[in-house]
Length: 82
Image (cartoon, rainbow, N blue to C red):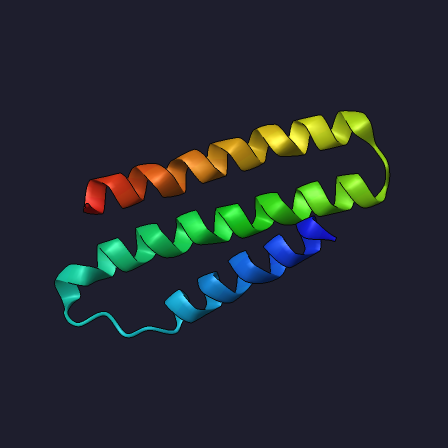
């Protein structure tokens, strides 16, 4: 299922990034913000998976709205960082 694969991918990326050592104290804020954005995206994909597997259309719509917001936050962070 595409949602499960997406959840695995986002989760793996979030774990990889969280395991990286910031080069200096100045990078701690960036690491924290990026980790939070990736964790939010991972949680949002999980919510979509759960709703889809339950065949709950209303919950799926709600979860997709959350996923859209999480995705927008990751994109905004990427744009900010250039």
